[in-house]
Image (tube, rainbow, N blue to C red):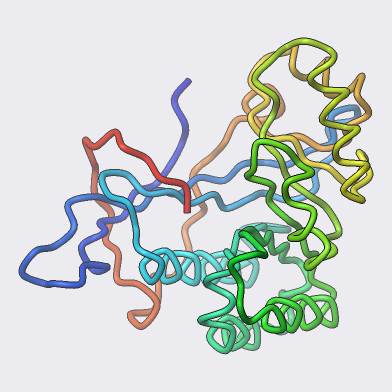
Length: 256
């Protein structure tokens, strides 16, 4: 099923202007809803790349640009609540820039949800992660954690570091009941209640049924609500990113 998205040329991210990146940055909005009543929570601004694999610095620039874009959506009243993802590496290296963006929009930052992700074992400056989490909570911004490892229990250290209000995980590939009950059991062991779990990638009615039976409250995916293009906002600031819309024929995709 085709995903509604926008693309921006990745050339401004190039290290060498004489050899620009022949790829693009893509964005879509994934609605996050309860699985039973289909009540709205937030729309996630989901970012990925096509045609190239970003470096740590390039990924950080993209994520900070996404944060800026999400705050602009809220400020323009083109969205009620928006979620964005920031990696541990981005927070560790660019904490001041992140806080500066939040300070520009003090009246809407509480309607933002920040989803953190990364390996706690590879974060030398753990205090910077905790500093951002504490700062966000002081501003009543919801903090989440994106689970990317094959098993939830493999991310216990990261969950302990963030102590998130919610967690997001990809739907199990199997449609067996045991796979979903195992997921919920691991989530509980990791300290996350199933009612605070978002399962992404729900594409069929069978997956919706399994998620509901497992006690999972929130979901993303075409079976819940189809994605849509990010709403129009004023252009990105040049110091954040200077993307221009374009079409891309590349198929290689990397989540940011």
